[in-house]
Image (cartoon, rainbow, N blue to C red; front, side):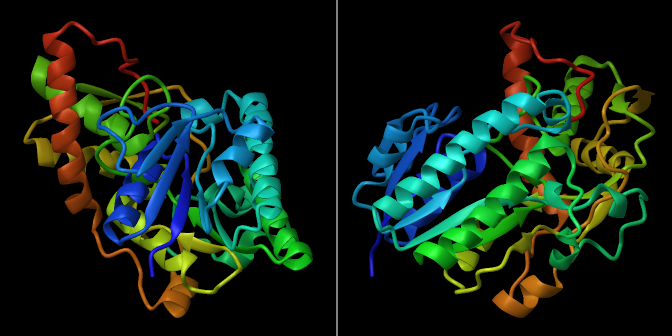
Length: 335
C-alpha cells in the first residue's frame, strides 16, 4: 500500500538516494532540505527548500505524511566534525528537537532516525585492530566522539522517550561511513573514500603521484556502500525493531589500504605522504550480529566493488574541474 513519506535531508547524499528508492517502491515522497540536490534533480514528488532549524518549517514539512525518514543534519568528514563542535551541536539539536515535536503534533505514524557510529565510546576505539567490531550494547557507559556523537546519542534517547510517552513509533540506525556516487567529494565536508578517490584521480590526471594522508594511515574503518545503506534504512524502518541497529559493513581496512585499493582501481602508481591532521578514533568497525538477527540481512557489497563505481564518478568530476580551472579543493584533505 502506497504511503506518503517525508525524507528530510533529501538534498544530501544519503537522502537523495533514499528518496529515489522510496519512489521506486511506490511511495509518494516529499523531500525537504536546506539545499537542492547538488548533482542531479530530486526524485521526490514534492521537493521543498526549507531550514529545519525553524519549527514552523518542520510543521509544514510533516503536514499530511504518514512516515518520516529523518536524515537532515549539519555533517561532514573528520576534518569538519573535529573543528565545528558548536555548529554541529547547535544546528543538529534544533533540527531534531523541532522535527520530533512536529511529528508528534501531526500524529505521524513512524519516524526513522539516522544516528552515527560516533556515539560509541572513544575508549573502545583506541586500537587499530577492531576486527570484533562495535556492538550496539557498547554504547553505554557513554563516552561518544566529539559533539557529533553526543548530539546523536541524545536524539536516540529522545526517540525512545517519544515512543514511550507519546506512542510515536521510531527506528534508529547507526551509520558507519557511507560512501558512493553523488556524494560530496571536495570542499572540506567529504569523507575518506571520496577524498581518497579525488586525490588518486588528481594524481592520475596531473601526473603528480603524491597522495597526502593525515596521520600514519594505520587508523582503521569500515565503509558502507550507498545502495546497501539505503536498503538497510528501508528494512530497518519496516522491521518493527525499536532499539538502535548498526548499519555498516564489517569489512575493515586501514586508510593506507583504502588508498591502495583506489590506486589499483585507477591503474596508477602513487606515493603516500603522511602529514599532520585530525584522525578521529584509532579503529572502528561494525559488529553486524544484531543486524543479521533482526533483519536476516547485512550489506552485501564489498568495498572494492563500491569503490569502482565511486571512483569512476569522482574521476569524471576531477577531470571536469581540471579542464575548467575549478580546482578549488584542498588536496591535503583526507576526510
